[in-house]
Length: 191
Image (cartoon, rainbow, N blue to C red; front, side):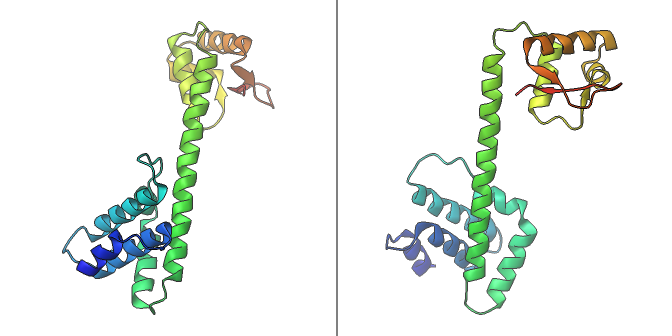
């Protein structure tokens, strides 16, 4: 453990992201504690990634990404630890998960920014509680098609009130009729 800690804290010409992956693997392999070795290994990996970023702020979490892919994580750990000393497959898996963690953070940030821009555009419009509630549902990724009957059900209002709410939002340019139409006209956010 003394050699491991010294290596983690040394600042050689090791690539910092690869060092984070190797430190994670080696700590789990050393397994110095009865419990929590995986959590500590993820924390060490995150520490080294933070050092690599050279920034006090991080908007992604490799630990959370590993937790989402726990089964594959245990599989790659087992095959790496029981195989030869070749860590290529582990590092490839680690880097791929880092990429997915960055993509997830990018997607989350895009969603927050889109939502913020939307509400900035709608700030001066006289919206009622039902409209705000349903618009938030749409911004969160409404499942299926939004019809006036679904609006009435979710907003707990009459079909006529739902249609008035929707028509007002169409007039404001916030909603538009979805392609298709017919008896069950659906509506979507006007981008």
